[in-house]
Length: 425
Image (cartoon, rainbow, N blue to C red; front, side, top):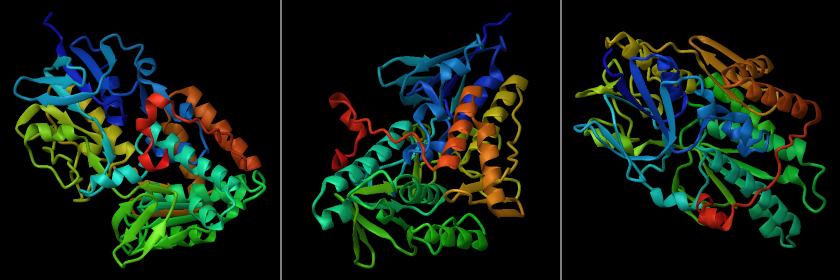
């Protein structure tokens, strides 16, 4: 029997994990999965960790545990820094070199600042569990500091949360923080009124949720305004300073917490191949998801920019990444390159308690029924029975008593201050 082919998967997100599962227990392949963390993260619910609705373990699971039964799959916690396509090797931050016959690049995206990387110092992103915990820690700590403050101006600054970006992440964060302030925390403080927490959602285009229909965008806007969220559309950020946003019209906004949900940038590993990328660093692959000029290299998930059969851009959502991972695994098993055919399962965004918008093809749904659909689908996609049960029970309890339990503030250790933006330490 010939030696198994080496498949190197970089990234344990939806695409990488699905590909590893698709190759599990196939003796023709020796699979190595590298990820800089030890867990698979259910990113669609990351904002709920940030807004104290869920605890971190509810939406994450050990990659080793998930793939424990796949004897031909090795999982290693390594961060890959470079790829040499000519030598068919990848090198980690620790200098370890991994060779491959086939490479699956699914390293995911990071927060993007449209070329203004200096803004990262003054903002809070939301791409990892550490990011989510940092947002929660910052907002809750600011409320604690406001409770101690004797200055009205200082309280106002501490009780202002600015969210830049009116896409699904920004909308969901704004709605969840509004619920937290108006429902959950209203009886917890004595000196401040948490219902006066100022949540400002800033969007550069004409409407929020631009990928949804105008009617659904309008529904989301009205719902957020009813929750007390201040919406600023057609508002461009020109500068971010410590605790302050500057806008194109010359106005400014002071906020002790500035959350950046306005853009993403692909992993810098996409630059290793010398092929066409978009402004965010995403690769434009061949129809079969291989990197142009590199038929042994596949790219998936947030690193891909391509159109579906109808000419629409394949969105950077979990179902698309899962389908890509499954397609690559099938391609490797069958030994035949085939075009990737994306099946659009739709999009959804939650807007506080009991309200959501769902869009699937020409079908649209708003309100409570859409919210129930959102709950069901997200529970279904969670990996592992324990996670499903934990999240379901947590949601049920929070729904009944308006009192989520994940409101503990844990300060990072002195050796781990790098996870906290400088202005929020």
